[in-house]
Amino acid sequence: MNMPKILILLGLGLLSLGLILNYIPNSLHWFGRLPGDIRIEEANRSIFIPITSMIIISIVISFLFNLFLRK
Image 1 (tube, helix red, strand yellow):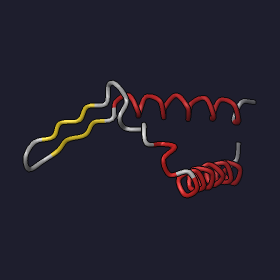
Image 2 (cartoon, helix red, strand yellow; image 1 turned 180 degrees about the horizontal axis):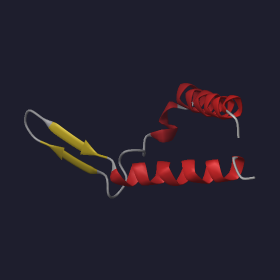
Image 3 (cartoon, helix red, strand yellow; image 1 turned 90 degrees about the horizontal axis):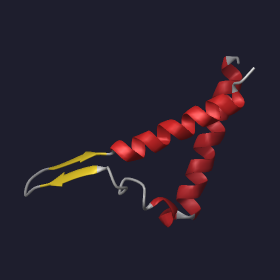
Image 4 (spheres, helix red, strand yellow; image 1 turned 30 degrees about the horizontal axis):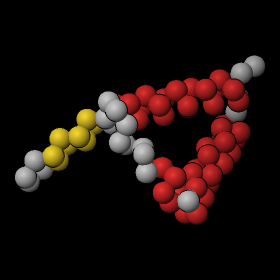
């Protein structure tokens, strides 16, 4: 697939994410709070490692690329 089509798909994905976050702001409140996401909070610092969330994003992106870029 050539670069213009990839950029169009990325733009549409960002546009749809922006619309979701703008018009339905609480729809993704669960993201980052999944079981397996590590959150360490202490008095003066906090560490957040979103392992499960990143695995889900990776699976979704892989599925979309395989769906749209398959020959």
